[in-house]
Each structure stands twice: as C-alpha cells, then as structure tokens.
Length: 187
Image (cartoon, rainbow, N blue to C red; front, side, top):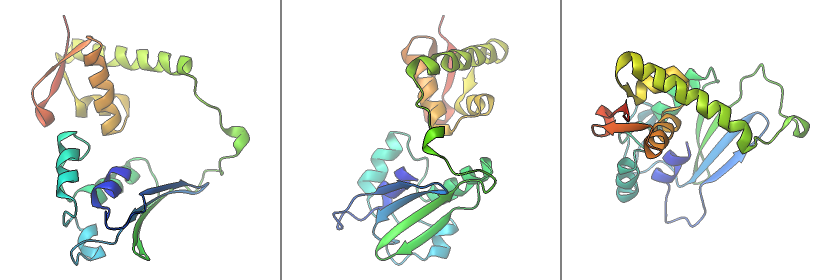
C-alpha cells in the first residue's frame, strides 16, 4: 500500500504519504487524486496511468512493483489471502486513501498487549525458516520465490528479502533473473 501510494502520489502537493494505524484499520493516504482522468471503476479494474514514470521504473528495478497497474489488485488479493475485509479506496479532498481493516472478530489492540520483539526472539524463527528452505532444496533441487512464499507463509516482498539474505550470507546461491530466479544450496 505504501509503495503504491508513493508511486502514484502527486509531487505538486508538498505533503507526504501518510500512514496511520488505528485499532480497527490501517490508513495510507497519498497526495493527489487519481491521475489523468482515471475513474475509480477503471482503477479497480486494473487500469493505471503512470504519474511518476521515473519512480515506477526505479521501483520496478528494485522489484518493489511487478507490473504497472497491478497495485490495487495486489492490495485486494493480499487482503483476501489474510482473510481481511475488502479494503476501501477513497478520494477525499485531493487525497487518495486506502483503508485496510482488521478482521472483525479481533479485539482492539491494547497498549498492555503490545510486547516488543527482541532480536534474540527473532533468531529461532529465522533459523527454522532457513531449515525449511534447505530441506525443500534437498528434496526438489532448488526453490523459487513463489515456492518459498507458499512454504513459509510469508508475503512476497518478505520472502524476497529472506532469500536474498540467505544468499548474502553464502547459504544459498541465486540463479536466473527476476521472475525466473531460483535459489540453490551453496556448496
């Protein structure tokens, strides 16, 4: 949502992309309305007009976006994958806002319930994920981002970072470019 907001924001408006977290929802607001006469119906159907071509090109090269015009569809898909209510897409006073709601059966988060995750707490989970990936590679010979995402139950961008980190640590080696990239055990 944040990447999409930054990609399509109006730089003529000097305000920033704003992220607000409430008990019941996450709001991401982007300066500017839909660009180039695009209607909300067209945007919901996957049509897009690039306001910031250079930003979109850089985000594409960084693999933060896959294709132009897929942002709203990907937000809707992720909400469905996590069993969340359908997000709202709104144009409000020169701003484009996306509201992503919590599951309705969840209680609001209370300050007392929040517990910071210490780095030491993350290590066992990281090692467990490494073992799962290496076991998969042992059986199948390699693993793609999609296969790792399904195996680990992570978001696409998180899976990419995780596999890249394993490659940077010398545990895996990368083979192929972008969408055809697979990871092999580094011998």
